[in-house]
Figure 1: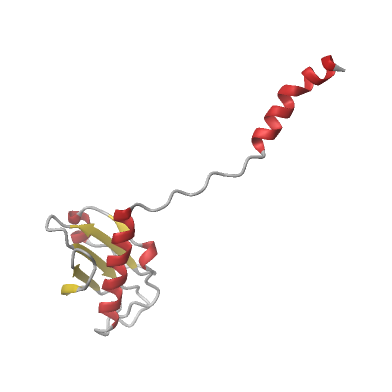
Figure 2: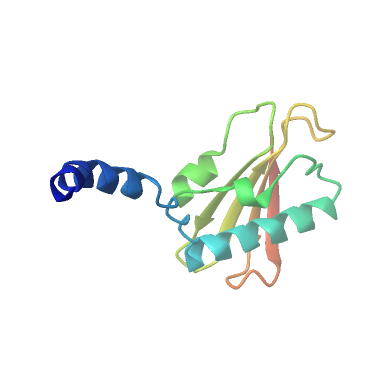
Length: 126
């Protein structure tokens, strides 16, 4: 009986290790959380200024370098959000509305204060 069990031991070990629960997803870093908060503040400010933010989701925003954010994104079927941390610790949040929105393809560059406590400026482009 001992010999039979020793033959099955490697197989049982492999099966047991395959049954382990998947690792938990990594929690967002503090900087990513702050960036999402800045995106949310920017979307709120834009909605108060009649910029169509329908379909925009702060949690889907991409964190990029400032130069890439300033370059913006091409017009598309979905709202796109880029976020960059500037050297003065403010956030640059670029929101490109979708082609289906009432702000058809417009782009807003929103400067959000360092701790996302408000907006210090908004520029609009096409």
